[in-house]
Length: 441
Image (cartoon, rainbow, N blue to C red):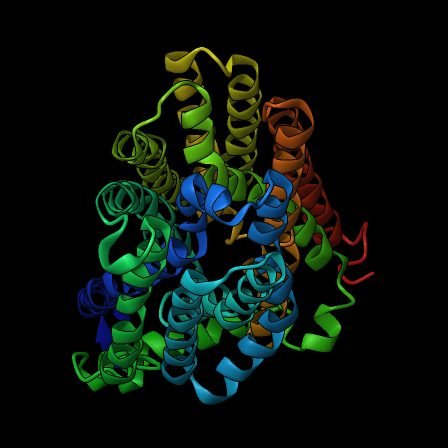
């Protein structure tokens, strides 16, 4: 039997990874589902909230998107802090604060209050997603990360599957209870679980393999040693300051900006798009909104596993971008044809969600240590500015033309650009490896 670090057999190490996957991934998925629901439930609240408060579509689009400005400003500091104090304290703080901010949305009455609370929600959630991406690098080597990332990122899709029907149920049944509108109950009831989950993080989440009571000490040491050896590999940048001078970091940020534009669009506008194609019942909207995310979940898991099995990431990511672009463009063209538009939206979700796990394997090929902590956060924060731009553009299109078609075309173009840029990233890496292009221009 093969022996690995610290005289641990390959079978023992495999069992360690299996335990880590089963212990960590479901819990992290659950946390992100809560974060995602609290981030995007405003898309369902919008169906009644805008009329109650007298907000325009553009006000909604700006409020939905300003979340990402706060997110952008505080992500890098949050991830650097996680590297210093650990994931347990960082993720607990994030989870509790975003729950409180989400619940506060139930009591906004003016445009500026709406903007302020959405901004704070972004500030409080900042660092969660890149923090988990970084956290998983403490446990799993690069050969396993596309699959592990894919399993974690099913939380995007599962949140859509769970969040849509749940929001539809609350919106359809809670209006007028205790004098509160249905959208107010939506924010309150979906914010409370985050407070409980934050306490659970403090109680149950180990910072690193050595802290996991459910791993044998020898296996935990071997897992940490394997990750540490990869971090010392030639060609990996460990300095955050140097990473900021590496053009590959900024190329990854631009690629991610384009990918996220599609994710933000389907997250914030799927209920409205379904309503635009002729569905009016809130519970039916919630159920139909789950369909694209179910398909996206399957695509995400398959893509991550297939990329690890074949060792090829570039084509997987680029192909997903092309599928996303085609689906979004077709959705825009088919608005008004209910069944076809929903099929197109499902195709878009498949491409958008499949791109995520393989994308995050790209920066991890040349980053380690503090550079990984800061640069992953920087890539995510810059990329997530698309969460401001895309919803606002779709909202502006709807306000000006009465339809989201032009906004969807705009986002489709960004997804197409993502596919093109992925090929550019691959050529850059190959050139740098051959000495034909600088790795850190």
